[in-house]
Length: 316
Image (cartoon, rainbow, N blue to C red):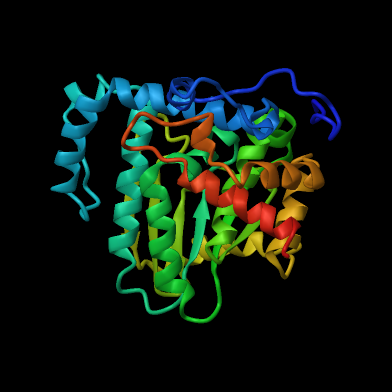
C-alpha cells in the first residue's frame, strides 16, 4: 500500500475553489488555509466530487426529465425509463438516478415497518462510497431512516461487505472516502458493521425487518440496471437473514470511536493522521477547495463526517 504522508511532511500543493479565490482577489490577496494541502484526504474528496460534478452537469437536462418520469412511477417496483433517455446518460448520471430511486423506494416501502430493520449496503470502494458523502439526497435519506428507526431504542444498523482484496487494490485516497462515509453514518447514530467475506460482496442491497419483510434496492455494480422490490416470502426472508447473520460473526466494537478506529486499521489508514487532518479541515468547509456546481450535489455530508472524526479524536 502507498503510505500516507507523515505528520511533519511539507505539503507540495494547496487547493482552493476558484470562486473562493476570485472573491479573495477582489480584496487584494488570496489566503489558502494550510488545511487545504493536497494529500490522501483532500485529494480523495476533490477527485470524487469533480468526477461526479462534471458528469451530472453534462446530463442536467436529461436527468430532469428522467426524475420527472420516475417520480410518477414510485413506489411501484416496476420502474422504467425510455431507452432513448437512458442511452444519453453517463454511467454516473444513471447511477445517481438509481441511487435516488432506491432511496425513495426504501423510505416509502419501510413506512409500515414496526420493528427496527437492518440495512445492507453494497458500496466497497471510495468511488462508490462517495455517493453517501456528496449526493444531496443520500444525506436526507440517512437522516430520515435514522430518525424513523433510531428513535425506537437500539441504533439503526448498516452492514458493509468490504473484502480484503478490495482494500489491497484501492489507493489511500479511496480508502479514506470509505472511512468518511462510515463516519457520516455513525454521526447520525447509525451503527456500522463490516463483513470481509468476498462471497457476500454480490448480495443485493436490502433492508430487512426480521421475519416480516425485506426491501431490495440495488444500484451499485448492477451493470447499468437498478432493481427495487419488496417481499414477505418466508424463503426470501430466511435467505436475507442468513446473509445478515454472517456479518454479526465479525467482531463488533461497542462504541463509534472503536468501530471507526478498527475500520481505519482494516483499511490501512493511520487513525491519528486522519483525525488530525479532519481537525484541521473542520473549521473550514470542503467547499473551500471542492465546491460542487451541480444542484444535485453537496459537501455537507463530507463536512459532517470530518467534524465528527475531529470530535472523536478530541471530545473536549
